[in-house]
Image 1: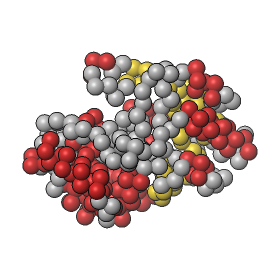
Image 2: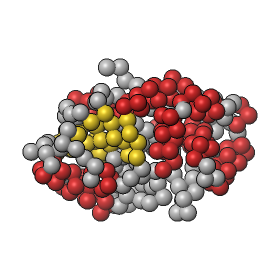
Image 3: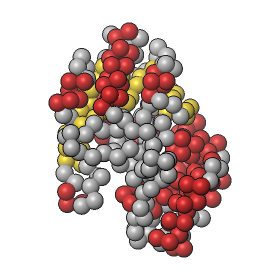
Image 4: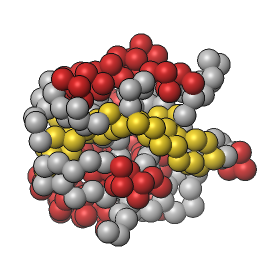
Length: 272
């Protein structure tokens, strides 16, 4: 199966891991992803159905719009990908407009624009819920036409929802497979990791997700695969699962020379 890239740039995206994830994910009728992000696993697997969720409403609204009216959305989004809009002044004007408007369609167009023109594909909000990623200063940001059309076509098999992971787990069926890609646990207690939604994902959340996943496999007989940093904390949290370790390159560092490979843990709770 040929690998397909997501149309969004995404910190922590799983494109580089999809081959290993495909080998590790159990078979089932429906893949459920409570932490969808850019959707690389969705795009590179072949389940009959998908239940795809994320806590970020801008992300899910954009996916629903692309699913419902792909050609209109693509045509309108492409208007932002010209030399005129690729400067700091226009970027900050659009960012300010995005933070003022509540119109879902306009927000979706601007969300894609900022993803491709903002720094390093980051998705970050301040405590007031305002998008605050700085301008990226790229020579010619790529318009992902092919990737948008592929996503729109694949989304015919998908249902998109904006819910917490705990609520998503309540929707599970007996023929489901669950893949969880939560925000990374910090590599150290001093490591700073920013929230991509206005509410953060704490160490308590990491522990609760592990507990929910373990109980889902044991009591509902539904397999759950989780990916996270391979650190003593996650190995302790994911006790009772089967571990695999893969190396991935970090892409969040501002200095490309410091984007070293780190170990990623794949923890599979098999259906009992």
